[in-house]
Length: 293
Ligand code: GUN
Image (cartoon, rainbow, N blue to C red; front, side):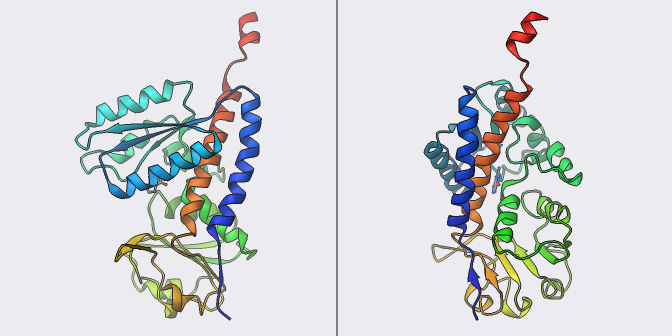
């Protein structure tokens, strides 16, 4: 029997509905959650991702600001933009769209975002919290993948998971989230020898490389859950890493590209933005009681 297709659109709608409820609670406290996106240069893929984020913010009634910086922006200039947003009370979430131009130090820039506003979950503080099993601001694509796996009803605990990606955007946070759910996790990457030997053992296989056709049917265990977070363009069409037509004959569940992980990432970002607004409100000193001191 061919695999069941995991519908990222309908699962992301559930995340969005849940976020709307949280949003209403925050709005009742007199706060309008807002996201600020910092975009450096004019990478076409980044432009598209940012457009999707803006659209969903507008649909939900979450504020959205776009701060554009020139491709040639210096690190200190970019950090000054971020720092202003760190102190801006009407902004609750800050996201620096990746990739950044090569002359900029990604680690240093991401870590200039206040951890309380780090809705991407890429600061050392929020990535570090994952090591302690705390998913405060969990990286959005990784969290989206977890939601997709959970939607299948397959047990994560004690399962063998293979992740083909070791970036801070997907592979590393996802590995921690899966470990926190008691899976056995193999993280593979471009230096991994004999990739099929790892993928073939996986009850759950997640790939995020951007190499069409990387994952072939003979690399997949029968009945595995296959999540494809890879993105590439072939003849103008978006495709993932998985040879979808062949792998769906082997897997039990499979996520498509497009319509799988993509919608989950944006939905999880909205959830994190509302969470950030609630957190910042709870950390503000109570005006009346502090005045009375
Ligand atoms: N570029 C690709 N994916 C992401 C993401 O999740 N966050 C940011 N900031 N940039 C990205």
